[in-house]
Image 1 (cartoon, rainbow, N blue to C red):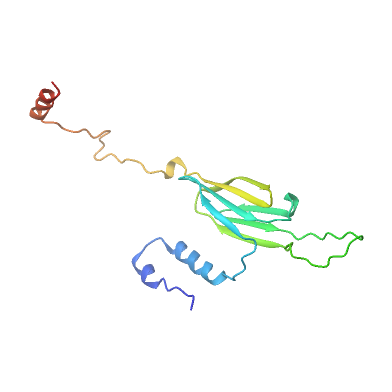
Image 2: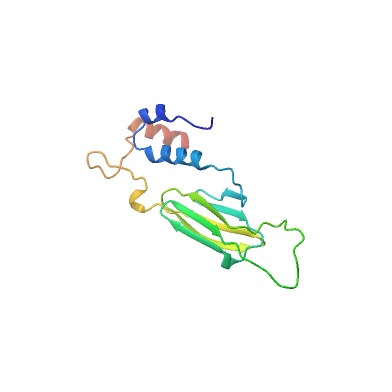
Length: 161
């Protein structure tokens, strides 16, 4: 049984419905198809890289679509038939594929390149200034100051001398 029950977590959390729905959808759609193989790397605090092994595909055969919170990579199978040869064994996969990657909010594709049979997709998370954490002033104070006792100040001057 590969079903996870998130009911206890749903009862005690607010605003995480999207996360639980995503986990349940991923568990349902996991068909076991591992083609093409891929790696996901974290390259920094806000940068990531996805590398797919797609030997035999040309840049024209690849379609990358970035939507809100979803990255879809598709490879289209091409027919290469030259009338001069007959294939006796086909061991190199040249089948079409589709890989979907759920992206977090504010993650965008920065770059994609195909070299040596590896498709590399660089991702960057750019949080808007309005969404970044800010210090909130209490009672309208602009800055908080550390209040020092005069005795402590004179003692630190004596120690420094």
